[in-house]
Amino acid sequence: MGADANMLAQRIDKWLWAARFFKTRSIASNEIGKNRVQINGQDAKASREVKPGDTVRLKQGAIEKTVVVLGLSAQRGPATAAQLLYQETLESTQARQKAAELNRLAREPSLSIEQGRPTKKDRRQIERAWNDRWSAGID
Image (tube, rainbow, N blue to C red; front, top):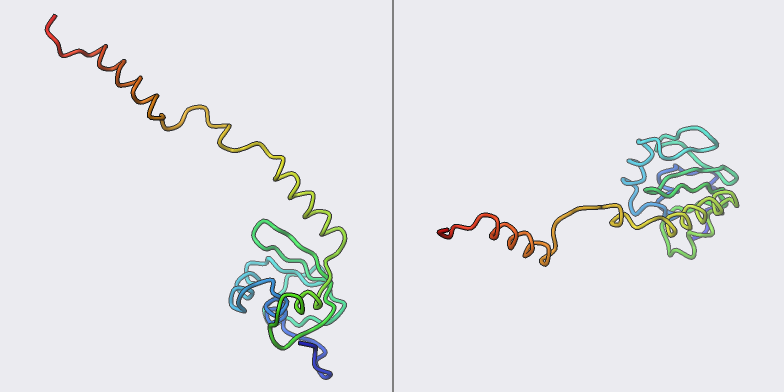
């Protein structure tokens, strides 16, 4: 999976696919089109070429990564080989770990719901109160 001797630059969509940031080239192109990928601080187009030494900043969902291009590859290979194509910056790694820790320590969203759908026990109490209140019996 090494780079060809004559390969000096590669399209960013192909590189993102080969480096396994996105599952397909079309997904990579769509993400590039949504300005979620920058090369050396500038928004990229799918046809923009990257070369070793370039800095690529990308978003994968909520995760934001900054990587330095170390190599190029014409084909997609195993993940271990793909990891040799880039190196994540120290700041990016620290920011991701901090975000993961904040997410882990965040309050459970369901705890903020004060009143939602009644439980079976709640429903029985409501029905009991309703039947006691609106009796159809003759008084």
